[in-house]
Length: 185
Image (cartoon, rainbow, N blue to C red):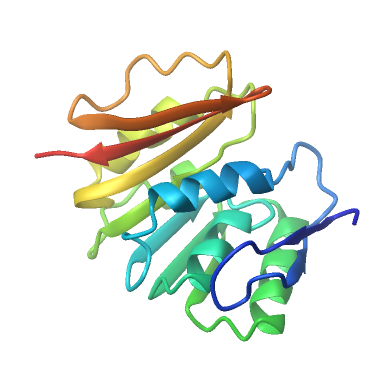
């Protein structure tokens, strides 16, 4: 199943979506997605989700499948964006909006309506996790008590994360480290 991934839960469970064959694009593995959505099982339905560095779209589509009210996927790779749009069309996922733009540029302005859940899976070895998280906090993109999922290479240094973000869960799977934070007042 090259360049395909299976949705693991919700309305579109077992459906496959395609993703672009773009350099550096690595979908979140199914077992990591399953763990993440077990962590978030009571938080997804009716939520507003922001999927940054969306890539394959696995996290945002999984959230939409599980009842998210809105999923905004931000990705700057044109081929990846075409795949994201195709997947949203095939699934008739009207709650999924795709924005083709650099993530830090997208986050440069304050938002009028913050998000409940943020998925952050930047390209590895580009050191984008901490600057992106700081921008999310500085510009008010995350709701009070919102949750932020951060996926990175297992050796990534996350020194400098927003001080008011509490680490709730953390795991590693091979070369991937994944963490769930919650924003506090």
